Length: 408
Image (cartoon, rainbow, N blue to C red; front, side, top):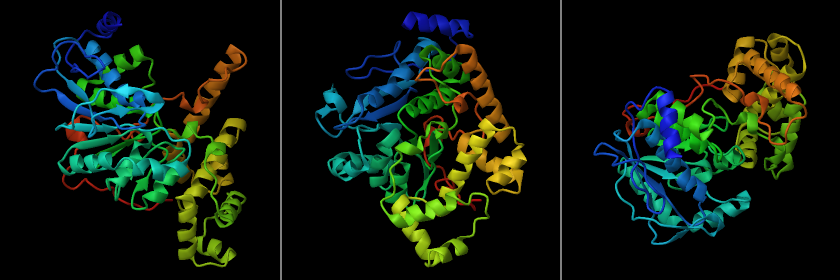
């Protein structure tokens, strides 16, 4: 595999400059010594963590090391823990080293069948939460993968910051961390030294971004092709299945959502909505957020985008007509909202869907594991919130909190 990777690198422009990877306990190593200027990355292992998320980022860095060539310095990766022994999900035993000073601390996700298990799971991870808090206070860049964001939330790192996590649990994270600005549509979000990623495979989006900034675009591009990893995704929204989302437990929020969903084309009027349910606007916002983890407007916007996607996929209506059908008289405002949720402007989304549909027709009946048509796209530069090297992941003066602007 290593020789094939080196050949692929040569075919894509030679070895050039880039980065290697240091030895990983119980895992293997990249070519040669990573050198004195290597980026030090610690992956925090803990009971019940996903072993694949412990090794996923290091594995991709190892492949990037072979692409970059044996003379390149780059990454020194270790699996660390405040515990002497760690058993990951599925009963896999992991070799770990004591916590040490690193440039980047990566916190993997963990096995979670239902949000009702969260409190019990997090209660047993107090040593890890304390370690995360201490490393962040020392200036270490901290990265969470998937639901590892809940550990960062417990450590207090998400307050006042933008963040993301698996779309399936984004509502719960927003409920538990009301001071955070949760962006469930994004794959990777970096804000003030803290990086969070979307569901499971988004660890590769983070790793490719890190490789791209630290080793160069060529190394990242070739690594993605060798590993068969999609390097053009910009959003997890196309993968969302509303049927799998936890249903709010209160009839109140369900009634509010039903009213909003049945009146998508109407202008959003918070005062009128509150009057319809005989409560104050403040009470409406508080109760809805407590039960769903977001605002009525956020729910309405998501429903409007979902309906717009259906209309773009199944009709020939103009973008302006689709916008009007879901409550927007200004096509530009609608297009900006649609792009924020899906990673595409409406016309580009329709074109991508029809290309994929045409391809499906040529290939015959679709396979059960065919990707969502919306995922066939190129990235929008404004959509990917990507980390770079350790210096880009760390807090910078004046940029350690997200700016809060009006949401349309």
